[in-house]
Amino acid sequence: EGYLCAYITSDGEPEENEIKRRLEKELPVYMVPSYIVKVERIPMTTNGKVDAKALPDPKKGRGMKEEYIGPRDRIEEKLAEIWLQVLNLERVGIEDDFFGLGGHSLKAIFLVNRIHKEFNVEVPLGRLFETPTIAGLAEYIRDAEENIYVTIEPVEEKEYYPASSAQRGIYIHNKFEGADKSYNIPLVRIIEGDFDRVRFDKAIEGMIERHEIFRTSFDIVDDDIVQIIHKKIDVEIMYREVTEEEVDSIVENFNELFDLNRVPLFRVGLLKISDYRHVFMLSMHHITTDGESWKIIEKEFLDLYKGIELPKLRIQYKDFAVWQNNLFLTDMFRRQEEYWLSKFSKPVPELNLPIDYKRPVVQSFTGDSITHQIDYDLIKEICKINSQTKTTTYMLFLAVYNILLNKYTKREDIVVITPVAGRTHADLNNLIGMFVNMLPMRNYPQPDKTFLEFLEEVKTEVLKVFENQDYQYEDLVDKCGLRRDGAMNPLFETCLTVEKFDLQVEADAELVDELSVKSYPVLNKTTKFDLFLQFLEYSWGTLLNLEYKVTLFSRSTAEKILQHYIEILHQIVANTNVKIEDIKITIDTAKTLEVVIDEGDFNF
Image (cartoon, rainbow, N blue to C red; front, side):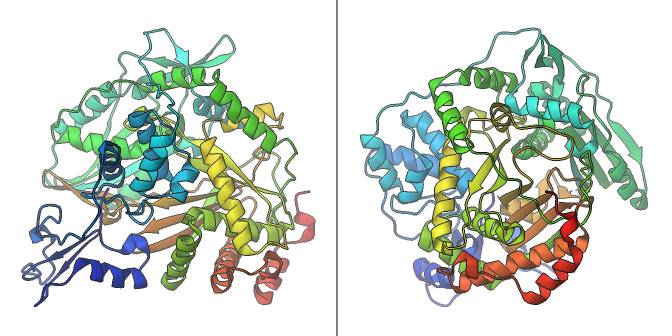
C-alpha cells in the first residue's frame, strides 16, 4: 500500500509531533501524513512542476522520527512486526492506536489472523477495539488460553475437488437466474511507453501456470458441484490494432458470457493504439476471482512482466476449498451455525422499499449509479464521533443507513447485507479465487433510541457478525428454509460497503520498466442488489456511490435517496443524542419523493 508524506522547507527545525498534532485538529486521521520530511528546497522540473522523482524516499531519508515506546519483550516485538506488515509502516510504538495508524475492519481481521498463526491465540475483534495497542494485546495474549492454529495443507491430486461455498452459491445463481454478464469482472489498463509484447505473453503464461484457478472449470458429480483443475489450457489472446476512437466500443463489448463447464473462465485482450500506447483488457468470471484477488493479479502480473521470479505457492485454491468443507464438520463451525440460526430464528419482515416501477417476475440486473462527494467538514466531524465512540466509519455509515431505511419503510427490524473478503485464514493472503462471503447485519432502529445508543448496538452487532463470519450466507439461506425465487434475493434487498483506497491506487499510475500503467474507466451497468450503497474513502475525500436497479428506481429517486442520507448525516453530527424519531428528512424533498413513489407501487 501507499502512504502520505509531507515535504517541507523551513529555516528552523520543526518538531514532527507538533506538526502532526496541529494537522490532527484540522484533518481526518487518514489524511495526516505518516512521514514529514524536511528538505532544503522543493525540486522543480523545467516545466515549473514539482519533480516528485527527485524527492527523497521518506523511509530512507531524513524523516523526522517522533518519540515512541518500543517493545519490551518477545511478545511485543513479534506483535510490532505483525503491525508493521499489516499497516505497511516502518516503526510502531506499543502505545500507538491501531485505528489511528490507518487500521480498519479488514486490516483488523488480517491482524487477528496473523496473531493466531504466530501465537496460537485467538483474539476477538472486540478486544482489538477495546485495547487497540500492542501493549494491550500483549497483555491479553499472556493470559489467553492456547488455541492451536491449523495450517491449510495441500491435498492429493484427484480427478475433481469440492467447490467452495462461495463457488457453489455463484454456480447455483448463474444457472438459476440464467447466465448473464453481471458475474463478469473486468480489468482494463492503459499502458504507455516502450511495451514488450513477448514479455507480456510470458507474464500471462506465468500467471496461468502459477495459479490453478485460471485452469479451473466446474461440473456436477453425484449431485454436488465440483471444480476440475486442468493441466494445460489453450488461451487465445485477442490482439488488435485500433484507433483511439474505437477503444470505448471494443472495451464495452469485450465482456462476453462464460460457460462454467469449460475453460478458460477468463478472457485476455491487447489493443495497440500506437507503438507506445496499448490497452490491456482482462475479464474473469466471479466464480474464480474477487476484489482482493484483483490486487494480487495486478501486482504479480507486473512482477512477471519485469522478469521477477515469484516464490512458489504452497497451496492453491482447491486446497482452501477442501479445508473449508472440512471446517463445516468442526465444533467451531457448529457454534457459528448456532449463532446464525438463533439470530434468524424469527423471520425477517420484507423491507418493502418504495419502488417506482412494479417489480418484474424475474430479476433484472441492469443497473446504474450516481456519485456524490461528502463534504470535507462533515467527514471531519464523523471522524470525531468515531474516535469518541471507538467505532469505524463502516459502523457509523451502517447505522445511518438503517435509520434512512426506517424512515422510508417504517420497519424496525432491518437486514442490510455486507460483503467481506472472507480470507479469515492467514494462509490465504496470496491466493487468487472467490473468497467473498455475504454477512447479513440485522439491526433494530426503533424510534425511541438515541443515535448514540443505536450506534453502540450496531457496533456490537458488527463485531459479533465478524467473529462468526466463517459461516456462509448460502448455508444460512438453506438452513432457514428461505424461498429462492426469480424476483428477489432471499433475506435482503439492499447492501452497504466501505472501501478504502491506498495512494498507489489513487495515483492511478505505476512505472514498470519505463512503462506507465493507468486504469481505464469501465462503466458498470449491472448490480446484484435493489440498492447498493458504497463509501469510497480516498485521502482527498470520501465518495458516496449508489448503485440501483433501473427496473425498480428512477434516477431522480436515487438522487433523493443520496440527498436524504447526507441530510441525516448532518443531523447526527449536529446532535449525536438525537432520537431516531426526531431525525427528519426535509419536507420539500419528502413531498417530491411522495410524487415519485406511489403507494400502489409498494411491494407488499
